[in-house]
Length: 132
Image 1 (tube, rainbow, N blue to C red):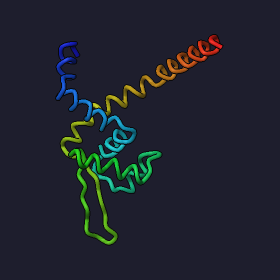
Image 2 (image 1 turned 90 degrees about the vertical axis):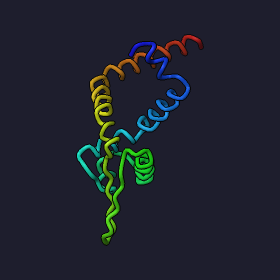
Image 3 (image 1 turned 180 degrees about the vertical axis):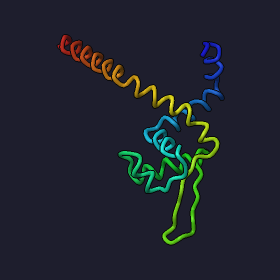
Image 4 (image 1 turned 180 degrees about the horizontal axis):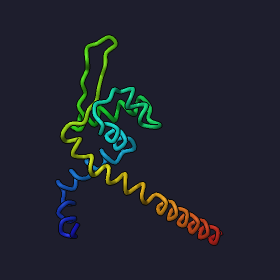
């Protein structure tokens, strides 16, 4: 992205829109939930099982935010017991390619990021020790 494009993107209104979108998709659970919905509609309990470490409360919050933003639709079936399914909307499906690209990048570069963190932490620890 050229400097001019970046400046235009960061202008007041556009910057707010971009920041809000990144806040939504950049939280701890959204990318994982959207990724799990790639294969089609999922029941809440299945989503909870497929997203490692997510609590019922956090999954509820996440799908509500995604539904509010128009990325996920919620369908309630009047059965006994009631069945609820979540599915990506067209807008949510448009989000899949960049999400998958980010996941691929994270997996491909995790070793390099971890090594960089170790080197940084060691350097900071040495600097702190030298100051004492």
